[in-house]
Image 1 (cartoon, helix red, strand yellow):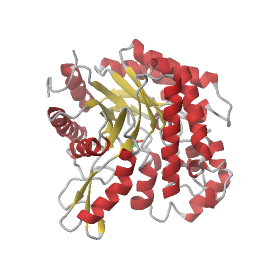
Image 2 (spheres, helix red, strand yellow):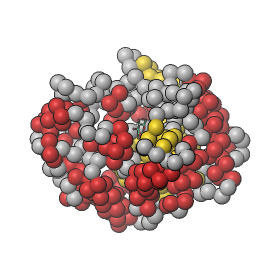
Image 3 (tube, rainbow, N blue to C red):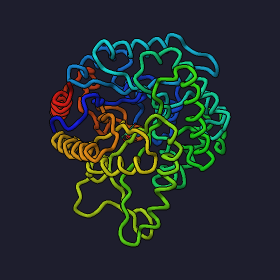
Length: 407
Ligand code: BGC
């Protein structure tokens, strides 16, 4: 694994505010987590209290030899009411950037990672074209405040996940009672209920892409040299004989339209966990005999190589692996996953692909959305009673690779 990566390659880990900070109480997710008939396994609660412990966490990540850290700025904290910005919240994220830089970590910021302020959902959420301008206004504010310290900005995390969710995993929606209760609690109607994750219509896709494009313009107006991109959830979509047509159609709808929309960006963030197989009838389950992860995904580390090649083919812009990892209790399998995955990334580089960084998901075991704290993606484990952090062997292994490849 030594010396196969360019000296300026970004080596890092990633987190998202809601999954680690704790008490993100002004967000839509917080509301949905606390409904009587919630579909969440448990509420996020204190999470791993990263909001208060970021200094130690950043120091720990730096001690492992990484040179970058990807984290998200929480819109619900920065703009607690429509048009009202919190300087204190912006200062918090500025201090995080400063802590990163003081430890030699380049801050890669995400401006939206699934959660939104409550007020946005009351106004129609991610289905209402007016929100794009609001997201751009928020992006401009954040850039004004932190842009000088950021290495690059991902506007929206996994722009295609709502569409994937609607077409693959939650066809029919998350359940009538849950939607009714959520809509009521978030001051909207079931018809207009559109938190990011549940905004799966074609119209919402256009809103999401407009939000990205308007935010990009706002960020560039503030700081033209700051690299801006979006990130895409990309599984390696494989076709079995006879499944080519369905796969191509689904891939166009779920990945290509988003990659095409990123052609003017400075980079695309590729986020990959596994592969999906398609037959003539549509998506197939896991192949018999292939090991499954805690998410019931196939253990398929080589997927990242395939998705990088696909992203290159369609978007043809510089690429960054903004997330790659595995939910498992068995850290030996995590290590094996990273080893195999990084080999395919190295092969992409050898073939001339412009891959600029690799961020393991995730720095810490954290709140895995609907599934709560059960799936463990971290290279560092956290005892949520004492908040004590313990480095796993996979982190040591990644650390050795990062250090061997750094100047
Ligand atoms: C998301 C993360 C999530 C991870 C693992 C990605 O879709 O960006 O927030 O924790 O996958 O499921």
